[in-house]
Amino acid sequence: MRILITGATGYLGQRLCRTFRDAGHCVIAGIRFGSQIENLRRYMDGHIAACYLDESHDDLTSNFERWQIDTVINCACDYGRTNATSDTILDANLVMPLRVLEAASKSGVRTFINAGTSLDVAVSSYARSKRQFVDWLQANIAIPKRINLELEHFYGPSESSTKFVAWLIDQFFGSVPTLELTAGEQQRDFVYIDDLLAAFSTVLHHAERIEGDFQSFQVGSGETIRVRDLVEQLQQLCGASDVQLYFGAKPYRANEQMHSRADIKALESIGWRPHVSLTDGLQRCIESRKTKQIEAYQTRKAA
Image (cartoon, rainbow, N blue to C red):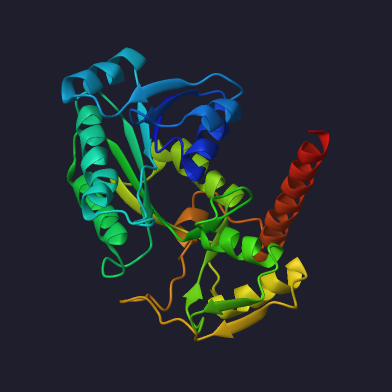
């Protein structure tokens, strides 16, 4: 297949590029002008074909035709962190994906897979804009197969420290004396990155056999854990018993979603199921962090 992956410089996008490249597909990275692609280039062993998504509609459509793209996987997103504005959130989560969707519609793309969210629209501007794009995707009958994946909270080694699990590990490894948190009664479904990548592969390779022209799948472990219990488990695995945890020191965010769990029966029916337990996944993240610390120390010592 000839697959365009938007959001290719992000954590999920990079790994999808590598996954499908290693599976023998032609992968084109959808990026914005000015994107820092050095990490992606290293991750792809120096070679990466790029398609700029900021171009005018005509130019974008011509790129689709030039690359003969038959599949799009949309991973572009802005979570609304680091003082993001409504404009930037809306552009990343709705406007730019709509531009890609329109070009795909006019270029003979057969399959469009969207990385959506399990969050309710009331939770944040991120959730609302991601859900709005799904409405447009469902309505676009020009593309024969349209698939939305409602992602639960995914995590894995080397992800950004802005993500919850990575942030917690950084805090515990940094030996902060105290950690102020919400009460932590939220029930969350955490899915490991390798299982998530396998879910994308499964729906892509079963797309033609999926019933109907639009289908939405929930993607997670199918299990929940209280955020408080996750924090305490990570603290134990990191050996950071000296860090004082203050649950309830911070309020919940407005419209906090207190329970989220994926119903994975539909995905299981086409051959996918998660394999990495939460404990194993957290341990892999911790070991990756330790390895990076050792490498950084050796580099400083050598210098």
